[in-house]
Length: 221
Image (tube, rainbow, N blue to C red):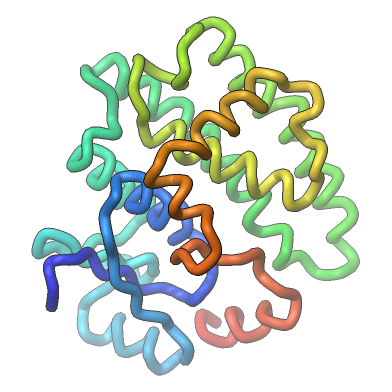
């Protein structure tokens, strides 16, 4: 195995996508192994690779890491994307926890059954525009800097940009009432490592297609 981190997950976004974003923002090349059958998944469990019988799995620095938040905390600490002190880290953690809540709504919309999609969409957009984005608009205003915390890029900035772009896929004008988030999006998107990740042909994954949902369910259930 090379020295690159190895990511095992579906060939899709899910809970691995924030990890891909963070590694890309840090300028770290990584390899991917895609789960395509339930047998592959069961073998990982049987061989003891998955501590809680769940993916994502990231093999990095001799460790077999599971649990998205733990993996991201390690990557952020390793590549200086976790603030300069304990207070900054606490703020980053607080913002990121809110982002994970919103990410869950955005990520799971494509998996909703037809009869629940409309209701889920309305709730998802309402929370995006009235609960979560106003918070980050205010954080940027109060902090008065280019980044959410301190004066350098952190995992919080990377994850917020990812979520903004996800929200815009569902509602293109979702940032209409948030001028500081509009500027933030333009600014963070232009950081060289992130700009590269946003180009076609990168390891960034597309929005799940409706026809792929049964394949995903078949692997895990």
